Amino acid sequence: MGADRARVVCTTFGRLLFRETAHELTRRLRPAVDGARSEEGRTHAAGLREALEGLGPFYIKVGQLLSTRPDIVSPAVIQELAKLHDQVTITPFADFEPVLAGDLGPRWATRFREIDTDRPLGAASLAQVYRAVLTDGTPVALKVQRPGIRPVVEADMRLLRRAARVVARQAPRFNAVIDAGAMLDVLFDAMRPELDFCLEARNMREARDHVAGFKYLTVPTVISATPRVLVQSLAPGCSIADVRREDFTHEERAGIAGDLLAYMYRSYFLTRSFHADPHPGNILVQPGRPAALIDWGMVGRIDRPLSTSMLLVLLSLAQNDGASTARAWIEMGHATPWADVPGFIDDMTALVPQVAHASLAELNFGVSLTAVLEHSTKRGIKTNPMVAVLGKSFANLEGSIRSMCPELSLIDVFESELRHITRKLAAESVSPPQVVRAALDLMVTGNSAVQLTRGLLRDLSVGGFTVRIDQPPPNRVVHSRPFAGRRAVPDLLLVLGALAWWKRRNRRSPR
Image (tube, rainbow, N blue to C red; front, side, top):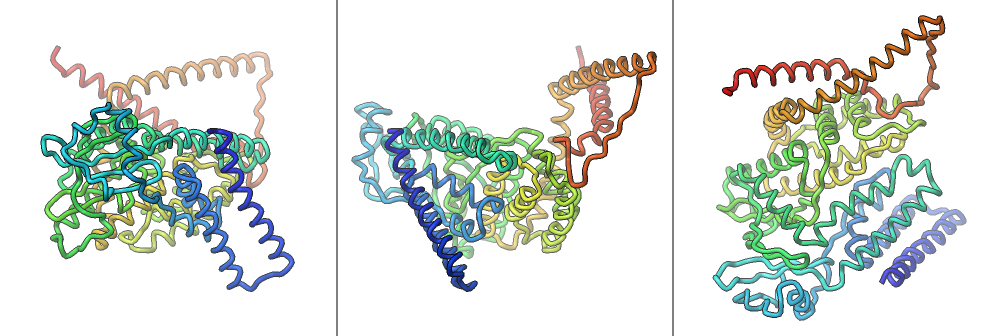
C-alpha cells in the first residue's frame, strides 16, 4: 500500500512540476502581458487544486490549510485552494456493508428499521452519511467510513513526514520560519478523529457540554460509535448558507448568529478546544429550532499561553494598536536570530489602522490574521503552526454568521464575551492548581536568583566582577521570547496576591 501510494503521489506532483518548469521557461523566453500572465496563474492554480482533489482527503486538507498561508503560496493559488471541497462521487451502499458488518456484527441490519440508501445526506472522501431510523422509531444519521481509506491516509501522512524532513535539511532557513513538520503535525492531530469515530464521538460529547448554556445552539447526541461507524441524532434543517432569512424572526437570526460567535470565542479562549471547520455546510438551521453544529471530525486544541496571546492580538487589532499587535504575535511563536522585529512592528503600525478603520461589524478576523501572518513570515518571525487552523476556523465562522445575520456587530458580541472570558480567566488564574504552580515557579526562580547572587558576590570579593554590554546589530534579535521580561514584576505581584487570597479563603472556610 505505502509504495503504491507513494508512486501515485510522486507521479502526480512530478507532472505538476514538469508543467510548472515548462511554463516558467516559456515565460522567460516570451514574456506575457499582465492580463495573460494573470490568466496563466489562475490556470496553474486550478491545476494544483484539481491534483489535490484527485489525491484524496488528506491532500484536500493540506490544500485547505495552505489556503490560509499567504506567506507560502501566491494570491492566485490561495483563491483557487479556497474552492477545495471534500465532496466526491457517491459510492453504492453495498460497498459500505462490509464495514457495518465488521464494526456492528453480522446482524447489524437488525438495529435499523430503515436506511435511505439511495440518497446519502453527505458524501465525502472519508465517509458517507445516511438518513436512518432505529428499531424504536428514532430518526438518526448513520456515518460510515469508506472501506480501506485509513491505510491510504496513513501512507500519505508517512510520505509527507519524510518530505518535511527533506525540506528541513535542504532549506533550514525556510524551515526555521515555516516549520513544515510542525504544521503537518497540527493537521495530523486535527484529522485524527476523522479516522476514528470514537474520537469524533468524544469531541461531540465535550461540545454538547460546552453548548448547554446557549439557547440557540446545539450539538447532535451520540447514540453509538465504533472506529468506523457513528450513529447520532438527526439534525434537522438546511445549511446556514441556504437559509431564507424571511423564514426566521429577527430575534432568531440574531440569537443563532450571536450564540455561534459567543460559543466559538469561548472555545478559542476558555475551553481551548474548537471546531476547526465551521463552514456553512456544518451548521444546520431550521425555524423554531436551535442551530446544530455538526461534523466534529476536525477539532483544534491549543494551550493556555497561545490562547491568551491570540486574545491579546484580537484586542490589539480592535484597539488600533499596531505595536501591541506585533508584540502579542511574537509571543505566539518566536523571532529567529535574523528576524527584523522593528520592521515587523512598522508593518503592523501600517496594517492595523487599515483593519481598525473599517467598522468592526465588517471586520473579518480570519482575513486579518492571515495578513499578519504574511508580514511576520517575511520578517523572519516564526509563528505557531496552530495559527493557520485558527485563522481558517475564524474565516469559516464569520462567513457562516454573515449568511444568517449580516447586520450582527461582531464587536458587540466580542465585548460582551470579553467580560465573561476575563472573569473566567481571572478565576482560573487563582484556582488552587494555578496558585500551586505559580508558587513552584516562584520557588524555582528564587533558587536561580540565589545562585546568581552568590556568583556575583564571589566575583566582587575577588575583584573579578565586570559588566559587559553587547550591542546587537540593527534589525537583529538574539533572543527567542522578546518582551517577556517586562512581565516579571506584574507576574510576581499576581502570584503574591493569589497566595494571599487563597490563604484568606482557607482561613474563612469552616473546618
